[in-house]
Length: 447
Image 1 (tube, rainbow, N blue to C red):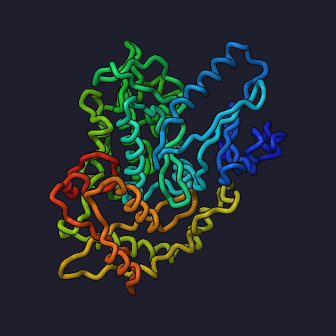
Image 2 (cartoon, rainbow, N blue to C red):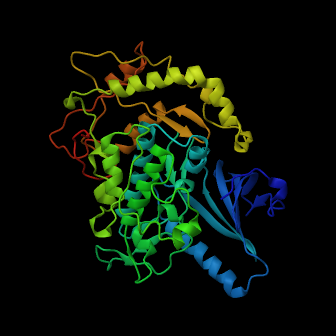
Image 3 (tube, rainbow, N blue to C red):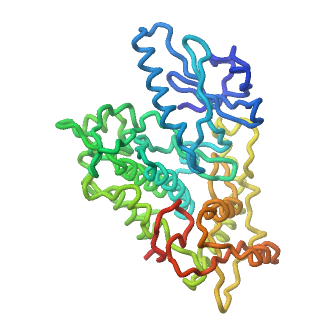
């Protein structure tokens, strides 16, 4: 969906209040048959995103009904998903005979596609945080009674909220896996118009009806992670969608290759290899890959390991940010989208780490969770609040993990302002890490 601010050119600019409830504010983007507005919900008193779907008046009645059935199908899938890393769908209603609206949770950040256009290569720590949160949403979708395959996971369908948190959206091509489907997956009866760079080989098989499962989303997540780390697609990077399809680019993609630069950990590369396993039968599904040590390694005090190195790298990055803040800010501001409405994030040149000193090495090392910089659109915010949120919210249902409130209070008042969080030891290793809801993970650090 093209992101522009062009309310005057909108075909829906004559609508001001929708359904006596939603006041349209400004245009966020437009696609072939729809436009997305930022709006205000006058009943719930919150910002929302209104996606207005316009049917072509010249379409046949059959085509109109087909489009409506597709939209209702997406709504019926999406409305049941309630998770902090999935965009909520609040409402759907008809405006007139040729127009209807879906109301979604509003995310004040940009999408990952816009981020990667501004900053093609992300530091591994940032990319890992994004990937972990994407997998949290996928795990939730695969632990439901009726499992859901997203089937269109790409940077345009990954949004950021005001805290830098990641949210998966757009379930237009999603598939519901019925109870009687075996482990190999369900038949792909309609491929839809997905993004070919992110599709696995089995989706391009023409000789037979392919079987798909959550392994499709695993492949897509692997491509997403590769792109964040290296600034390019692993397969068909310089090819158009049409060439990828006609030249069987993905079907020929037997092995993933890694550039020599930038430097990326072996653990990250191994995770990508697992995600991009060519044979579907050998590729892990969502619930299996979610337990990979790279995604789930524990930070408990008993491991006797601090994140000193990670924090040191952040401090080094801060120096680079200070040195190049003017140049980087100008580069960010070259994009038209930066002229949009006010943002709730901190401008890049204001993001400094001068208030966060390197943690002191203690005789009994304390646990210092990483403080990732999460890119939100064309700006960056220091997501200390996001890490607090991950601890406070995602551990809410795990009764065996308790935060040491006195330690947290002491850390927040310390002179170095380092964010120190200690987890109490328990006899049960399940749930040592808070990244995945109700997923048993190993408590071993990567490598």
